[in-house]
Image 1 (cartoon, rainbow, N blue to C red):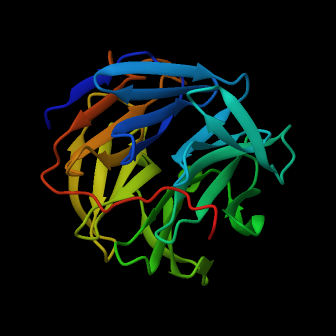
Image 2: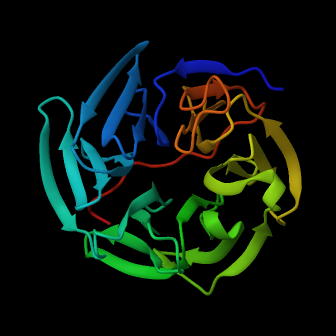
Length: 282
């Protein structure tokens, strides 16, 4: 097993959305059902609570954070606690919420939803930029796994419940038809949040699979890393040199491993591809 360091052992119900903030030199992540935001900076952990599900977070290039709450997308200033609505959610909040989200190489924000009854493929994929929030895809149960190839021409996107990772051609904020990138066998887990490294390999956290899988650009499995948590939810490269992989996890469904719900880190031996901050001018 790789050597993991425990960053925070707070027993998150669904820890998610680790993202490295280059400007602030810190790590952000969330606990979705707790509506909680966390920051690790200079060895200290701070937190904020919002009273509703918080799917994901991203730094904004002009300052502040972009939060995907159940009710919509908001700008948040951590220093003052000010929260400003940018776009209301486009789904029925009684049955959906925002889930995994990430900024693309051109500075636009992409975020998917989860269809909570899980009885059909009704979740969506959205893009948010200066033109507003628009639906760009769907036909999934649990939208997840957003990441881009280092050159920005490929968008990856998974449906966790269907055990499938898709790929799309991507250019200037537009995507082509999707194709299957990889299918994950049930015994290996469910493809959750993901990251891409500088070599173009796709790192996918396998919920309920106790592992992270590194996929080659052709979709074949290059490497499997056993984790000390049963339900890793997402991984993200960070640190000054982007050579640390941060991993969030969940306790929802019951704790199986002692560290379930913790946020962890380890050195994977490869650097990550940079993830930019959201650019509201794009």
